[in-house]
View 1: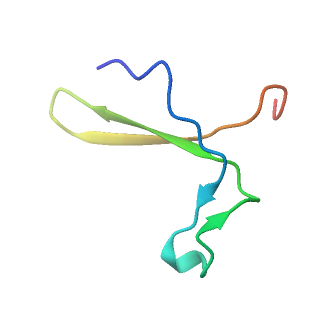
View 2: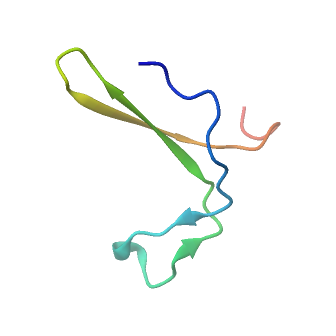
Length: 57
């Protein structure tokens, strides 16, 4: 299975119910999840933070 080459863009991170009453946290960077299904049909999810070009490293 090949991961997608492009993904939809997100500008905010949606908060989950235990993080408070706000629907979105505009201070957190957006993230992306890659789901990998192996030959034994085990699903592994890898999460990455999406940074702007030039940010981070």
